[in-house]
Amino acid sequence: MPRHKTYFPHGVIPAVLLPFNDDLSIDEAGFRKHLRDVAATDGISAITLNAHSTEVASCTFEEQKRVHAIAQDEVGAKLPIVHGIWADGSLEAARIAKAATEGGASALLVFPPAPFTMGQNAAMAIEHFKRIADASDLPIIAFQYPLATGQGYPNETILKMIDEIPNLKAIKDWAGTPQQHEWHVRTLQNLSRPFNVLSTQSSWLMSSLAFGCKGLLSGSGSVIPDLQAQLFKAMQAGDLKAAQAINDRIYPLAGVFYAQPWVDMHNRMKEALVLMGKMQRAVVRPPLVKIERAEIERIRQALVQAGLLPKASVRAA
Image 1 (cartoon, rainbow, N blue to C red):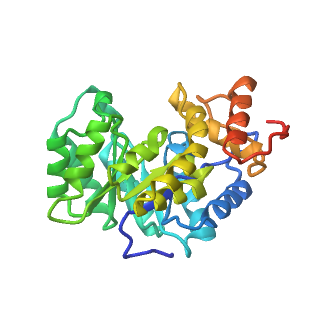
Image 2: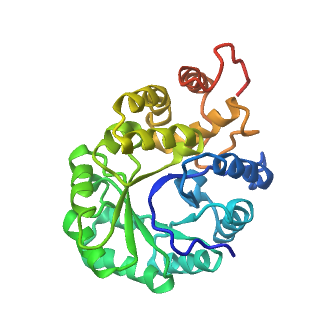
């Protein structure tokens, strides 16, 4: 299996979507096309799968392995693959990590266990990540949720995690507030060993990148990987005017993708790809349901504003 052994999580990492057939089975042909479309983008450093964007909560262990195998077959020789670890228990998380490693993944994105919504401490977080690290030598990216969810790791906890888990190399930062986000960038990217902050503040991405993140990992990269790559490059170069022009195109899409309820964000991205002619159908698995036509129209209008659809576009959703 292809594996980019020297990969250190950085740069622009789109989290791809997972198309389904009308019977809710995985649309493998559609997924392969989507992977090729995203992977053809200049300026991206990896792709992520088995994450929120691929509706991982609705996929079985075997389906996750299949999603990974398809991605390795289509784009694994070209790009590193970041494999999501979604599990409420540490033993299952370790099992997924082992399978991902054996399948050729280049890094792991570890979601926080759902039981942490009822409270956590540093020992619990460290135990969870150690179980995963014991099962895999791959670089680990910790998905940092907002502290208010209960699943986010407090400052002291994340510092202990980094200290005790050598292959913890980055966070996917969804802290939610500029203050917490800035602390992550200033503190974690200036430790005694290399560590990167990957922004997923996709509703205010340009502002987030201004703090100095070393990368971004976002589901909206499944729709606008080129714009994200261009924005990241401009911000890295300090070219504010170029970044503002790109952000002017991203802004209307961020508004529709990240509207409430947030759980529909990737549902909306599928609809966007259908409108753009890049995905055949926008089927989601329950408990998600198809969004209403009025919202699909708002997505179409945002795509027009972003210059991704002509004004006269009337493609049916």
